[in-house]
Length: 188
Image (tube, rainbow, N blue to C red; front, side, top):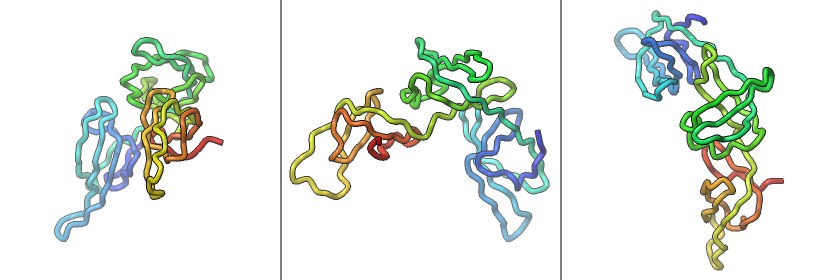
């Protein structure tokens, strides 16, 4: 762990503050006309998700936390748990579906994910940015509809609803952004 000055905190940094683990979401350097400059930082608690706005002066030091990143392979879902396997030691890790959130619907057998660990305790998970899925339902194209960006609803094989262009039909495979839950393009 390294000590850094308060004005060196950047978005994405994980710091220890008030006895908890916080990730910097936004930072803004403020230089008031009177007094010293400070860094206005929006922090999000990694454990319970609460947010906090804090001012850090350049003279203050905080502990920057280094997270261990490990690759895991998704095995299967069991009740409210998701089971992953460490690709190097073959140990299994069980995470609650709530821990992964809505994006758990994008998990597919054998999918590689990155788990962020702090003192061997999982605190975050990163899925691939894009996945390829098949459309099971799509509304038909309406004749005479404008060619301007008019999207229609479609249902993917995992039950997620996305908006797709009018030329996409049921049975087609598309690439979906897992962070924004949006259509990107047709699959090759």
